[in-house]
Amino acid sequence: MGVAGGGRLRSSSKKLQRQRTMNNIKLTLLCGFMTVLVLRGTVGFNLLVNSGGGGSDAADADAKVVEDIERILGEIRSDSEPDYGSLAADDGNDASSNSTTTALHFSLPADASTWPYRNYTLGPKISGWDATRRQWMSQNPAFPPQDGRGKPKVLLVTGSQPGPCDNPMGDHYLLKATKNKIDYCRLHGVEIVYNMAHLDPELTGYWSKIPLVRRLMLAHPEVEWVWWVDSDAIFTDMAFELPLHRYDGRNLVVHGYPDLLEKRSWISLNAGIYLIRNCQWSLDLLDAWVQMGPRGRVRDEAGKLLTASLTGRPEFAADDQSALIYLLLTEKDKWIDKVHIETEFYLHGFWPGLVDRYEEMMERHHPGLGDDRWPFITHFVGCKTCGRYEDYPLDRCLSSMERAINFADNQVLRLYGFRHRSLTSPKVRRVTDPRTNPLEAKEAALKMDAKF
Image (cartoon, rainbow, N blue to C red; front, side):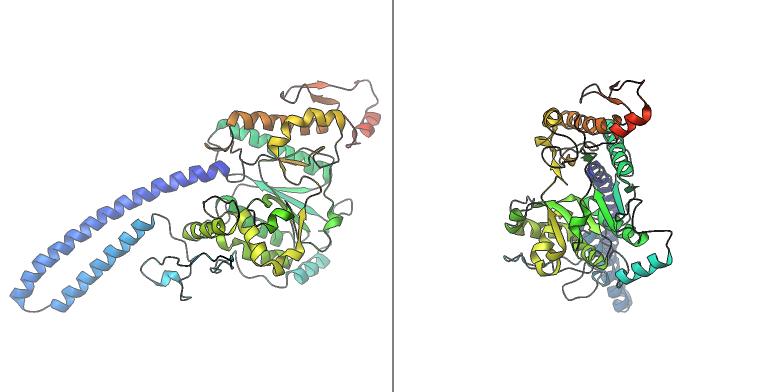
């Protein structure tokens, strides 16, 4: 149910159909060209013999026909839409300057050297952003960099595909997951942006978040942290707050396992949820991170490099998580000192080991812990409830998401004196005496970390 989970599959299917239609048209044209070429070869020769001239013009015309045929064949073999200049030829020239398709040629280095193709841009190069931000904020005091409690301003960003889910239940649970994020943001003074647009046609699927995050950083200089959260992530500790004071001097916060990162594991970090500081360093990181993202051959070839370089990674096109890990490993001196790998609480809690323990958590612990005793976020990785394919059975995903959502919702509903009848039911019941002084009840309910 990630931002482009099911949409990627459906979009790819539609694009494939369109491509096949175009290929059929191209084949028809190709047959026409070949017919013309054959006729010219026969008729033109007779005319040449009879007239004794015009050979140069005919030869030029035939060469043009052959060139057109080769171009059409090249496009049909590629079976993909153009890369809009995202590829560079080996000699440094723009690939679009050549009439034939330029293929990528490189060997997969055993020592995982840096990705050699770095000409894709998210927009005009930004420099001096830190000074520009400070100047803008000094000139616009109506947009303070702190929230109402004096803490650095955080902007939570999430989103989904622009069209409806393939599975009708997917839209229902997408709505529930969105409501969950709104609840958390309302309780903690966090601003939220929900996006349904692809801002860059080349950066689809997993990669669509990068141009969005960059655009929000530039459009909201008053925001200190941009917080990306996948649509399939559920806040399950509504009392826990991000310990932003711990991230002084760090610009990227991501859940992960430092020991696995040293072993070059492709699951050592999770890029579905991360905090990135609004600063020049982060803009530079996004520019470097996105180089493996353009769809088509760049992404496919980068996937081969990532599979050869990262432990345990299956063979598939480059994804943003693997690319981030690869970047931090191959350019460690440049980036790693500003990265905080979060291990003390569940910025990303993998759902299979959590959803069946919620009752035990309620009995033994209380909100506000954020770790395995009461996970901050339960992330439904592998549950593509919005698409047609998933890594886990759909029924299991939906029932587990229902439990997580109701587990979180109970922490909100008790502010109003209600709770769900069970974690598997959307129905609620009253748990406070309606005759109680409402202000006294509010004071008790506002203790979000109180035991249930």
